Image (tube, rainbow, N blue to C red; front, side):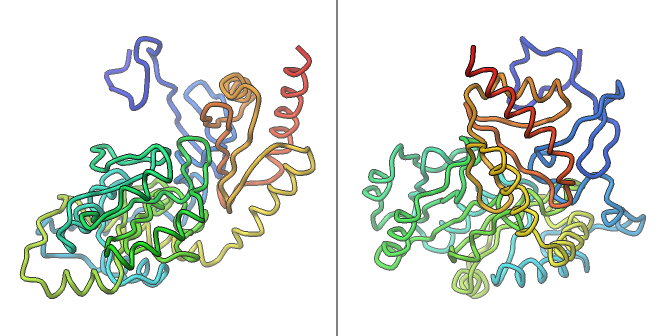
Amino acid sequence: MSNQIFSYTNHSRFDTPEIFVSGNNDMITNLNGTTYVDCNSGLWNVNFGYNNSAYKITIPDLQFYPTHFWSSTEATELAAKQICDYFGYKRVFFGHSGSDAIDTAIYISKYTNGKSSIIAYKDGYHGSTVQADVYNCYNTLIDAIDNNTSAVIVEPIMVTKGVIEFDTVVLQRLFELKKYYKFNIIFDETVTALGRADYSFDWKPDILIASKGLTNGVFPLSAVLVNQEISNYIKNTNKVFSHGYTMSGHPIACNMLSKTIDLVHGIDIKAHANNFVELFQSKNLDFVNKGMIFGIRVKDGIAMKRYLQKEGYLIRQSNNVLIFMPMFTSKLENYFRFVDLLTTFQVCDQQL
C-alpha cells in the first residue's frame, strides 16, 4: 500500500499506484514495462513531450535562490519579461499552480478596487479555496453583478466538466457591464494559455491566469498577469502587497518557462491541431475542439476510457466526453489505431 494520499481518488477502491519510470515524447512506460500513448499530455501540461532535451536542468540553476520577497534572479526577471511580452500584459506574479493562481488573481482584484464580491460560473474550476459565489446559469450570474462586484472569473473552456466553451454572447455582455460597474474580468486560462488555445488573444481580460504548459511539467509554476491599469495601481499605491509564496518565481521554473516560450514560437500548433481535426472527421467522430483541446462525445465515457487504457491509451473523461489533449510534438500516426479502436467500440456498443 502506498503512503501517499492521492488527489481525486477513492482510496477504498485503490491500493497500489501505477509507477511510471520513463517517457519519450508522447509515450510513457510503467514499472512493469507497459507502454502507453499519453493522450492527456501529462495533466495537460507536458506539451513538448517527455524527456525533451530542451528542458535539461543544469547545476547552476540549483545553486542559488533568494527567498526574500523583495528579491529576484536573472532567470525570473527574464521569464517575467518574456511572458508579459507574449501575452501583452504589464506585470506578472509567479506562483506554483492554477489553484493558487486563482487565489492570487482574487487577491489582486480586491487589492486594487477594494470590492469584496467574486462571481463565477458553475462549470468552471474555482480553485481549492472556492472564494467565489458560483452561479448555476448565465442569467443569474449576470443579474448578480453590482457595484460591490470585484471580479468575474471566466474559464474560457471549462475542461473538467467536459470541454464546454463559455458562452461568447454572455462574455460580450460581461465586457459591456465592466465599463459601468468597474469590476475586473479574470480569465482562468490554466489549461488554454501558451499555445493550446490562448483566448486572451481574442479577448483582453484585466487579469490572466496561466499555469499548465508553462514548464512542460518539469517544475511547478503559475503566472498571474495584470494589465497596465492594475500594474500602475500596484506601483503607485502606498499599500503593502501582502500576498506571496516562499518559492514564487523559482529560477528553475522560470528557466523552463523561457524554454517553453522559445519552443512555442518555433512550432505551428494550428497546423498540428488541424491534422487531428481531419483525422477525427475522416472517421465521423462526434467532437468539438478549440485549438489543441478536443472533446470527443461517446456513448459510455467510463467504459471507453477503461477500454482504451487496456489497449495502451491514457485518456481522461468527464461523463460521456473524452478529454483529448495531445502534445504539440505528438506523432499523428500514434493515434490512427486510437481512432479505429474508438470507432469500433462505438459501433459494437450500439449493436448490443
